[in-house]
Amino acid sequence: RVSHDALLHMAALLSSAAVSRVVAGANTAKPRRPAVSTSMKATLRGSHPMHPASLTKRSRTSLRRVSTTTVRAVATPVKGVEYDPVIAPRPDVAMPSMSDPWTDPKWKDVKWTVYRDVAYDLQPFVDKHPGGNWLMNLSIQRDCTALIESYHLRPEVSAARFKGLPKLADFPLNAVPKSPRPNDSELYNAIRQRVRKELFPNEGKQAHRRGGDFAAATIMGTAVACYAAYAALPGIVTGAFLGLAGAWIGLTIQHCGNHGAMSPHVWVNNALGLTDDLIGGSSLMWRYHHQVSHHIHCNDNALDQDVHTAMPLLRFDARQPKKWFHKFQHLYLFLAFPLMQVAFQIGDITGLITKDCEGAKLHGATFLELATVVVGKFVHFGLLLGPALTHGWAAVGAGVAAFVAVQGMVLACTFAVSHNVAEAKIPQDTGGEAWERDWGVQQLVTSADWGGKIGNFFTGGLNLQVEHHLFPAICFVHYPAISEIVKEEAAKFGVPYSSYRTLPGIFVEFMKFVKDMGTAEQIGNIGIEQVPHVNKKMCPIAAFN
Image (cartoon, rainbow, N blue to C red; front, top):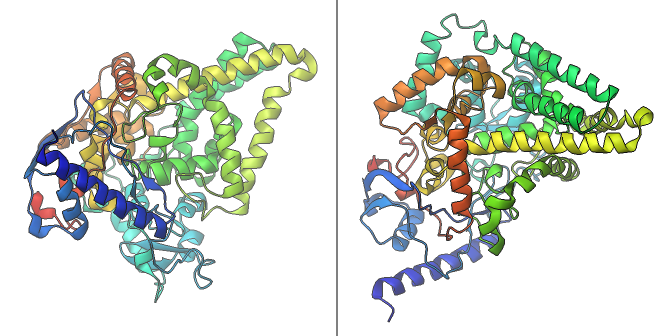
């Protein structure tokens, strides 16, 4: 027998699927993947009574799928039901049935941007921006609110700059998907104010970008020494050490440099950012994928490219379709991670051809930036294969294999752990649309820290992932001090803050999570009415809080 509740639930799913297919026909945007159900620690933080009268049409539809009056736990998957994806427009694709400013002759060649519901001509800002054009180019032809607000320790400075920019009349604002708004987050504002007051009281001197010189010199010196050994005697051992040096660069100076956070000097940040190209990546693709997609939409089930990059080989999120072989992924994981370098090469070339890194379109990329992809590949492979001229292809082949495997393994393991543990994957934390959620809270609840100052030095602050996501434009040497402020403010606001003592500690939890994701059933999308942290200034159900 089928219960009455089960029939209602199945009917709601069918209705949702029909609506999704209609929307999909009118919109070519990337589908939002169904939300996750984890059996480990996935319980909703607190309870939030629902008030149907205050819901939007979209939210009321979601309510019919969840027949509860108070949301307390993760939705239970219905076995055997295949969920249609919920459509979520990418930040750089026009909303359905709207005028498209990306193709409209009136706007397609204009360096427009949207900041807090106002369209501006960004050209004067690009010409004068002290952070350099490469960072400002990320804001071109998209809603740049989160990028701008998360990158400026002094929000009044960026706000003043926008007041001086020309506004664009008759611009189709509603066609541009909204961005999250960090400055609307009470938690983020409280943390940022304390960071300014306690750590960087002498404002205007860019002290938050200083302090990384010793680390940069040490890392580059190590890389040069490792390459010298590889060039003199290529082989498995020297190739492995070169891979370690490359991974150290990838975790630290290229990462921080591409965020504009290694130095107050633009040319230094650009030069250090280009070391990504030396180790086989692409600084251009990294900036768009990592900063526009991942940082702004951390663990979002449709907008964070990192959520689905490894699919279909590896399934890190139960919002993704489950394949039969995923139940073995915790076993073949270490065979896949060394291939990260190969994935970089394919993704970079594909992105160059399509001008789309999958998570974000390269709307603002200049000819010079696009050229760095090609030149970087020639330099990288020239350095890697050059010793074959004097030492033969067998020795170099062994060295290259060791380099690729070691660098890929170290980078993949270090990058993966902080966002792929159970407490960082609770579906209610990334339900609804990105702009409906409290951006500051989302950075805390979708990341986990590990270690302290030593880990910070060797990972460029990636061990303190929460602090890095809150302050990507601050040099990583300051993250240990910032972490103390974050812990205190998170406790005051009642927001969970996850931290592990060591890398092995979080890695064990990561492996448990990977195994769980290999068998977890897929569930439907989570509506905003189930999200415990909303943007109270924008979300129509702010009364829930």
